[in-house]
Amino acid sequence: MTVAANPLQISRFLRLYDDDAAQKGIRLLIGFDFREYVSITQATPTKMKTYPVFRPDRSPIQPRHGFWMAGFDRNSQVAVLQAVRLYDLSGSNFAEHLQSLKVFYADPTTHAHSQDCCICKSPSAVKIVGKVAYHGDAWVRRDYRGQGIPKIMAGIAFGVSFAMWTPDFVCALVPRWIVEKGVLAQYEYTHHEPGGAILQLVEEGFADEDWLAWITGEELRRRVNCEQDTQQISVV
Image 1 (cartoon, one colour):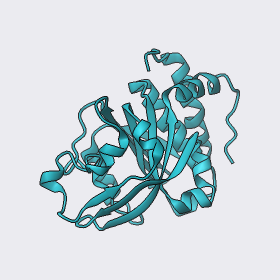
Image 2 (image 1 turned 30 degrees about the horizontal axis):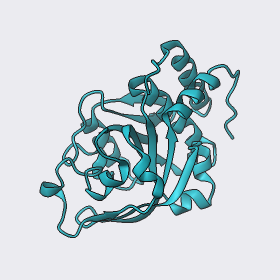
Image 3 (image 1 turned 135 degrees about the vertical axis):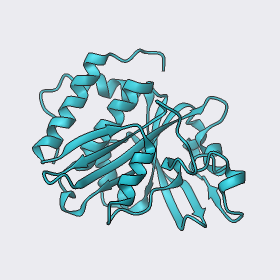
């Protein structure tokens, strides 16, 4: 994308989601130090282990190439988590980046187990190129589920990604149940299809079969520019 981000429009867009979170008793924090993020996730009892894609010990994130969000309840306990990072795929595509394991490890030859593998069957993954923002590690505490929190989380992820990078794509890998139960629809990704990643990370203990979800940079720009004009975002 070449269209510059308008800071005023973006601030209005983000404010709507921040206000919705506050109405639900959640105080949002945006951070950039992923060592701090991992310390928060490790201290959150019911959250599963963070994938290496967001862990500096396996995949360091350069300054201004990633951010994370934590939401705290009125007792200052963690209620919401998610992270986003940027990949430069100007000479590659998302399918290749997945299958080379470079999505997960900065240096697969050093950190990947000999039996680690990732198969991408999504036809659209090869078209995801350029500046690609990867959105993941989303977690909502049980007592906040069913309250429209995914829409708030996606709104923050989309708005901050647009402000920082104006990416060509924002994408995510999601388990099938997220799609089947309608949770993915709350994240408002424009596109999704199966076969995103059949993944095995042996030492990490992950074995997944995920769908690919994405929104294009142009769709993202329209969303930020249009929704900032609305009086209220309905989150149910």
